[in-house]
Length: 242
Image (cartoon, rainbow, N blue to C red; front, top):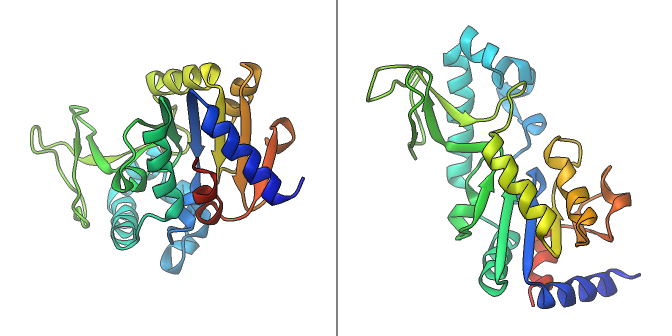
């Protein structure tokens, strides 16, 4: 099947769909200029994930961790959502029941205008108090060296899921239920190796859904899907919107 035929088939499926789930990963954000964790450059390329994105790292050196996340906030504040983000906003308006499950924490889907979003790995622009557990949005580009809770004075941390932490059970259950009951799923820019989210396409297939992947290369989940369209999401997604 040629890429043109693949695009035509997926577009037809989306045009007939009643319940669509879209799963997005780092690839869609990379097209906006946001590096993956492993693609961080400059001074951060010399640090490991365990130095910057684990509970132990934060307990050991919260100022270092916040310096990294302030750098990410500043970087994300300068980039723009891309045509793939915009195409998903349009798709949500067309499909009767639409759920966007994202592994990304950059908030670009919200900025683009997507509404029904499940952020399984959290959001970089939210902070959580390590003492009272209060969660708030804070769009400041620079949170300072060691930000504190306005309510209790406790140290704030980014409201994201770090390596070694469990996902929010309620959010994961919502994502799994959406996958089980959808008739069409798009998997965009994911590595297919981060579990338990990588199970979602299989759940959709088990439920009888048509599942298509859009990625720069095939992933471990590709063999179990209906088709994989190779290429940039920002180029392909606008072609798929009915």
